[in-house]
Length: 417
Image 1 (cartoon, one colour):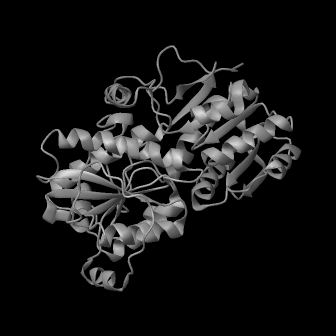
Image 2: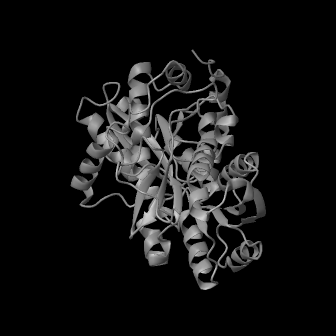
């Protein structure tokens, strides 16, 4: 068993000092009466950006939760209760605080889940701790979220180190054939948005590349809300790299790719980490995406043996929404919510200490959940068996190309020598 989490008794008293704040949308999947456990409903507060430029990602995450909850409610619910999702609209870290306050007091939620943005997950989970409530993270990836060792926090999805790991392995395996020389003779420009999300992934990738003797020709951080990223592209362009690696969110990555196209920046290979594999990017950049690599959440072109639940999830999503998911994060969110509901049932409680103690004993192999995930949590309650994949844009669609056991047999790498 893993370590037991810190006792939360004293922290519960802090809730008395936290003011309830308004704002946000309290849309729900059920008809909650605001009574928490007394209402016969199990209420989960979902913290995500449901407005602003990152709203599509927040909505995509929520859609994954909805399907997992609908499945549970069709099968007697969780802990004998109907599960209800209530939205907390947070597009900035300070809004994460106010929305947790609101949902914990006005709506009396039992626990929290989220989120599309790491900065929001950081403040929201710390605020949830003041109320002694579990915060279950499915999608935010910044390394420090689990490194804080909060007594109420667990992450079911991949973290920055796992994105950096897969990026490093995939680049080592694939890029030499694309650029026509070994890694120790290859130069890289690394750009990233400056929050804990982009910074932690980029640091891990740089460490992995330098271990192989690769040259980091330039490293450029930027504000993801900047209206013009021309200078970022110019600095990268001036370093004359063989490969450009970018970590960011959908809006800023789309802007970077459009800017690179306008400025004629065309290195031998480019790798986007964490985003760049959605229809939104395709609409923003067009055919110039072909050949671009993406390290991201698993898509649906996977071996059945690798992700036996992916095809079933896709069919349920299409039946509900009439199309494929806009973001691959949706399946990871669905997977994470399934894990959470399993953990609650097994713990027979929403108490953070009991839930974390329960998952510390899990050892479910890869492929146990959709997206190919297993469930084995380390001492910081990070799932070590949730791995991203490496994809490539080919003829207007993304194709899984790494790892070998995930990709379809006929999948090939575009641009290999």
